[in-house]
View (cartoon, rainbow, N blue to C red):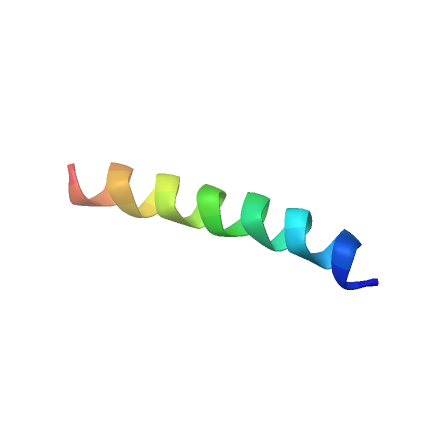
Length: 25
């Protein structure tokens, strides 16, 4: 189960970081 959650959370975190970077710029 954690093997499935890890890649998913990484994708979600990278997507949120991408939105935050666009908001800062």
